[in-house]
View (cartoon, rainbow, N blue to C red):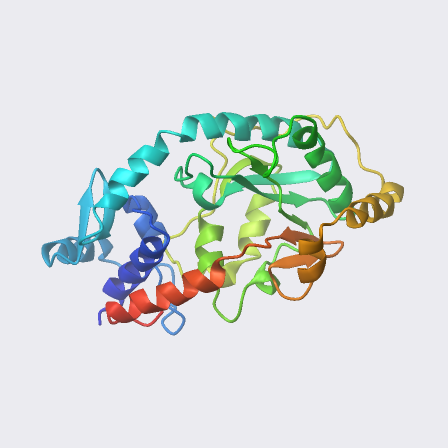
Length: 304
């Protein structure tokens, strides 16, 4: 099969298994050359022509500027309903970032998962990915969670746009490969490309370059940028971090870990707890997504 066609079908197969209909820009950005066919970023031309061919053959369709496999038209209708919720969710997300950017340990804050795609449901969490300065990750997590506790904004405290701060890395752990599930973590790859940064002190470019093994499979992907219509510029930090306080913050937080965290802690890449990475994804659907993705690829005659 032509590799341009295969790359488009891989991208759309991923979006299909997570029930999302991408825009043309998203489809091209996530264009996937595959594990065995990585090519320089200057190659893989003719994407627009191949999209047209796939439409003519009725393998894929588009409606309202969004693409889907034939028979999956309802994904566009569902996205319209969810997209209408995005302004409300973004308001809360920006309020959270207004607080986070005041913390001396915060370098980068991005929305992730379905909210980053304006596709979160009515009760969908606001999931954040946060990069901190080395030696501050525990303090940063503690200060980050304080207003969420006070105003009962965490999952379990509210059903309306709960805020989930469950993924922190520091600036010495920017290569995220150790957090992948197996040789190719298809969900993680597309998750990374879909990050929606709302605050970046400049480390975002370093984070991107540190993960070349992710975006090298996606030659049309480009580094994210903060859209300052919705994001924030660096500002004066009001809450400093202290090296002597880090061990105390770690001890206090570990003491309060629920049993679900303790039972999975450092057993695999779902829950990772150390002084450089704090990742608390007890409910991790990556294996399920990978299985469905492999089935979808097989259906269209392409290698995952």
